[in-house]
Amino acid sequence: MPSKKYEVIIGIEVHAQLATLSKMFCRCAVEADAPPNTKVCPVCLGLPGILPQTNKAAVELGIRAAQALGCKVKPESRWARKHYFSPDLPKGYQITQYEYPLATGGELELPGLGKKVRIRRLHLEEDAGKLTHTSRETLVDFNRCGIPLAEIVSEPDVRSPEEADAYLKELRQILRTVKASDAEMERGRFRCEPNISVRPLGQKELGVRSEIKNLNSFKAVREGIERAVADQIKWLEEGKEIVQTTYLWDEHKRELKPMRQKETAADYRYFPEPDLPPLILDIEWVDKIEKQLPELPAKKRSRLLEEGLTEQDIRILSAEPDWESYYLELLEKGMSVKEASTWLLNETRGILSARGEQITQFKVPVAQMASLITLLRGGKLSRPAAKELLAAMADSGKDAEVLIKEMDLGTVSDEGTLEETAKKVIAENPDVCEKYRKGKTNVIGFLLGQCMKELRGKADPESVRKFLKRFLD
Image 1 (tube, rainbow, N blue to C red):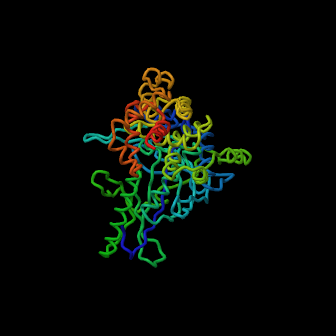
Image 2 (cartoon, rainbow, N blue to C red):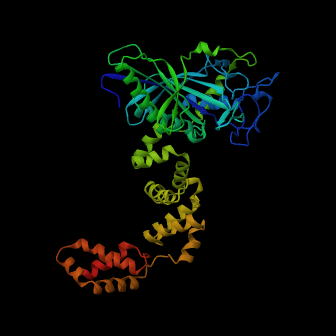
Image 3 (spheres, rainbow, N blue to C red):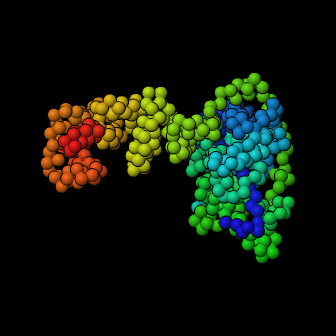
């Protein structure tokens, strides 16, 4: 990373797609992946005579996101037109918020780093369309035109790619927690635009910035920032003038490609949107939304740690709402924190990882997982048998009780059988038994393993150990 002679200054803009069913200013469905140009209407295509109407659900989600970030929601905000030419912007302007945003002045704490990043503003706007480039032509799909976005702008408080990564991951998690956005980066629903500048240590003035547009993976953010910082330090060392430039990140070549230079607010010719009135909010409605916010990630992490979960378990539950939901449902069904974390975050995660599947594809409902754990707790299943059973349930989707009968997995608890098995294994391993009697008591693990093998893993290991110790001692 950078030389110790320089300081890196990073501000980050994020465009998060709000989780509405319809677009920002019309009733078209939010289905960007539908066949091209099938989810459009005169409003989102910008045809003459159109009249936009604000989507109340999008405003509510924007308020929810702002409150979760500690921003002050403004009782009045206003719409503006942002003009620029692009083939995927049919109106020739974007409806956004400029001088009067929805919310300002929040902050976000970076987990584990003991640092807070200030949020300058959160405002609402509409998305543009999508361009697909081929070797012969450029194709335009307007399905995405008009989809509601929340643009979240940080202050230039970030100082490294690592801090940028932590900031974006925490922001994404907050948006998911309050259900303002699913923030799926790979589908373009959480797009990041870092602004990077470098200045000599001790200098007060900010350096000239480089902006990287539309990064949609954490890896791209880290690598893009690293490259921008390295380039700027090199230019400073060589005495070259740095020109304010917007770049695109080339994933394959791992390099920045210039897109345009010296873009300022004046270039966009902002002016008030004449077709939309100011956005006047009912204060009681805003307060009601805040009272309905769920537990936020920072507080949740603290609580889970107190409950006995590991940091790794907490990261999984915090990052993935579906995992957390499954976990909480297990607790509601009477499972302990230890049982729920072991069988969900260890065993289940291993099964899904081997299959390349998500928790949403897991064929074992919460009720059946609870049934498996209850059978194990009650001694009707051994631990090895429970693992085998879970894998079979994940394969077939069948109930635990059904598979126990089909697979003959019931626990061997008959004391006569356990006693005979222990005697048999002891008789077959006299050398090991002699080592035990001479003080190498850890060899009992080998004998126990042989017993469990004889019993096909269907006995309670502690019960078998008791018989072995009885005869060995």
